[in-house]
Length: 305
Image 1 (cartoon, rainbow, N blue to C red):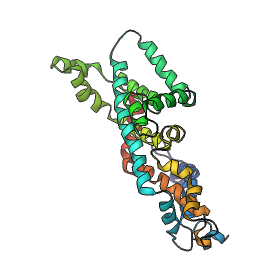
Image 2 (cartoon, helix red, strand yellow; image 1 turned 30 degrees about the horizontal axis):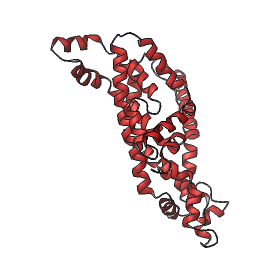
Image 3 (cartoon, helix red, strand yellow; image 1 turned 45 degrees about the horizontal axis):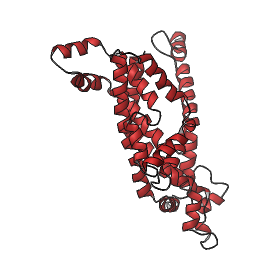
Image 4 (cartoon, rainbow, N blue to C red; image 1 turned 60 degrees about the horizontal axis):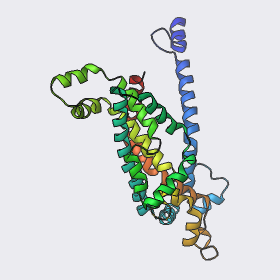
């Protein structure tokens, strides 16, 4: 009896005990709460009514669900138009960037040519040098080409392999294609396949996890990038993060101070609603692709060893 109790509490060679499991779950819940706390606080605050905001007794459980904050934030953000613009300047460059990075990574990993170390060195330099150091020449170039304020200012660099953080995606594909067995390519060549066909029929399917990881990270980085996006798109296209940065001014234009009643004044709940609407598309994308994303990270990490 004592041995069974000891095995239940402390485990054995075949399984962990109850104490270890409890400590493990407590640790995971604590870490998860640290990451989720800002998001939970944002959502709970965004659904509070003005009365709940003024009531110090109401913290985590509002007395009612109040959608008015979201309706105001929806109007202030001009949500439909800015959402479509955000999707345009994040998804299209990400698709192009992921494909071009895979082409470059495949070429670096599978072919030998003169100057390859120099190319890799320059590639690392583009990742190490902060974009703030090169933004002025880029801006002047885009101005001369008439691209400022146009989504092409983000799409064309992605097509040329110079999108946001393209170097890290090239390195992901480079490492992934290095682990691809050469016997697969040799077999395809014996069957008469060309280099282009080998890339599309052998290399691309084998690198599917790298494609998923690169695409998701690329979308998130394009979506959240505000410094370069504002410089290249200001005066033309307005994205959700750009509109969110002007949230207070836009709100006061719709609801002028001294004209609206106390319930329509800008408060913390409306700001939280605007912030939550800004990250909502990314959360939806993550929940939809969660299973493939986790599996892809695991597989790309294994093949990268």
